[in-house]
Figure: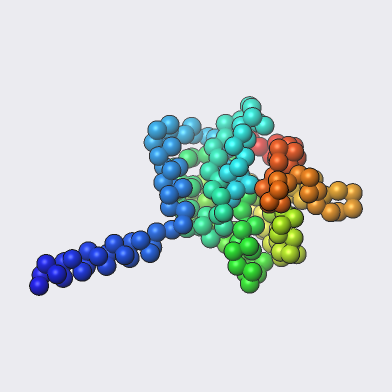
Length: 217
């Protein structure tokens, strides 16, 4: 009987752990493996966020005089950043953090409000400040991806809320990339995007680099 109880508890534990495993656990574990194999430098510029950062694999080429650590992971939301905040922030001791996230929050939940997404950002920002009260923390505005235009009004409101919040914080900036990605009529420039109309071509990243560079430490 004791053996059967033990096997039942063991099986229950395995099932529970499998259910509890987060969708991005493997990607976060991969970051840990990379860090163990090649310890990241201190006082670097840390990029945290979703696939627009993850796919910027040659970001260091755009800023050759800067030391950059890219910890973007594709499909992530601000909820995910909060969930893995300790793993994403604590190990690196950076001099500056740049965040790009929020776009996927709306795609993952069409009922989510601008205020809810803003609060997710604010929570993540506060977690960063628990470790690094004085470093520069900047947010790159949510972009208007053509495949997600139906969410754009809510994204605009979220951008505005984040901008207003950061304007009141010390050592924090809101980096607006929206205008740089629109034409003279205010329409998003689709030629900057890949066929999925979500991720960017190199031309898009060149615009981002031009906007971001003045803010880098």
